Image (cartoon, rainbow, N blue to C red; front, side, top):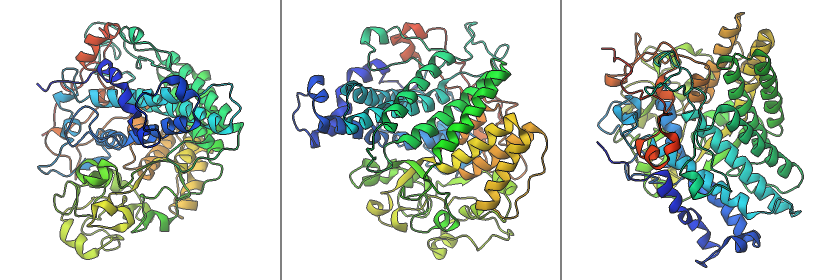
Length: 555
């Protein structure tokens, strides 16, 4: 059994480490809160610690799956049936792809997202604590809005992994081994006022409590960001449109919960309408990714300046993930390069699942983001950086070429590994709007989907479905294609109670990853580690059931 060696309380005790990046701006070591509150430059440094932490390597481990937020995005995709990791000797993420016992409460792997998200929350709390909410300074109000928006986004992604939703494998769909109803339990709230003593007895809060907290943060962010003219320096920081986008995400998640768990159709309808409203607000000022931008050999999905990107992770040449590509985005998620694991050399590619690929029309240019199988009319049309390298190094189909190395450089990690990765794109807002509309008015939602796909992805696309659930599923399928590899499909699959089907004719899933579920997969409700429970007795008896022993593998 692997030892879990970094609990939440231990991490919080080491909290000053999170502000280490301010040393370049303020080399004084004895910074106190009062100094931070009186120093706009110090507050600015704290703000930049939020996106800086996203690229942190080694949150709990030196293993090559621990490289911050982009690794968590990759994990979420590998927990679905949309992404298949090539079966090589370098599958460091097999604990997740194979739904191993490592996902249970006795092992360290669930501790990675738990600690990373709370460290990110702490970075946000530092900013919120440093700014007087009554300030009239435009810059300080923007910084405070950044803190609130970032904290809301962090908690929303966090609870999307740990909130427990019903599963058919649970007793009566909702009870754990201790006999407690755990559906709707999220995570403990830690804000800027939480003391260490409170953290030691801090329960998982229910869905309503958590969403009231998230909505409260977003309301404050919108207030702060809409009342001043300060502009963000780049897309590593959220702005007003991103706060609206986060609101749209939150309302969509909340609406699905109200519809399924609380059986409250009226509240679900209200929230679907709010999701649509906020999604439309978020679209302002952005343009949809064009075919040329999508398929660019030099800047395809590695450049946040593209007009569709709303929020991004941004690597610099000083980041460990750029210096050591075995622990970074390009080295794991890209394919056309010689460095890292998903490289021509080690061939641990991130591949689209055949079922997803085959369902997409050949007339949709997004399909050119993947190596076509032999006999496909798309074979030979893929826009490889180097067709010769591709012919030699992609012996199997379905590897993605969506995420290009920096500047299209295949060989130099200090260039090819310095990329941006998408955290929110405007296309997601179009799909949120279409889905939210379809839940209330299926015909109108279907038309929004058709209009978007025809105008931007496939000019001859048609959708003749009339059943509301089928229309929603088609919208979400197109969204899964659109955001493939960006860590978002996990949330929709969990939220909508979709099964995970990995075994079918032509599948490329092998070994212990060959699992089919009847409905929502239990492993999408992540466990809290036992060490965390030992340090916080309020969690005892209220964990999600261990998913690792609930499913039979299919030979």
